[in-house]
Length: 190
Image (cartoon, rainbow, N blue to C red; front, side):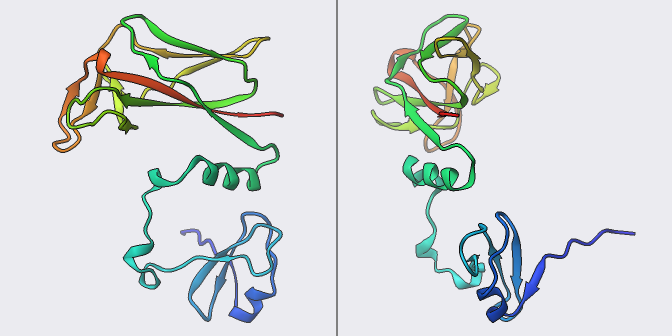
């Protein structure tokens, strides 16, 4: 026998007068929409159906600012998250690339590839999120917290960095002198 998940439901008026728990969903039987609740806002936040949205309201997720993501996360977690971005770091032919920061409680680090000189369809200043080293796509850095801060290491094993060509999407090895990496560090002051 299969299992059924049923969310709280009610009319638009009933939903308008309901403050659900943080993360709770309710179904509006009049408008045929879901509402997401945060434990504070009466009525929650109504989610639009795709037939209610114009194509003009779609925003690329990569176009959203760090401030947007910080505010979303900070409203929904016990300790606010801070985001710091390093200066450009040279790509070296070593076993790993390391950056040390004074931050404690680093949750994770995102590695961005930044074009310095036109290559593979990218212009100087372009930021690439989808890249890799050797056989690995977008490798996750290792975090090692010490008494003084956190060491962030990207294992490279001396392998070549690569990107997908901007227009053809073919995998292309980069010229290290034409690129730099930046680390976006997410940490909390807990």
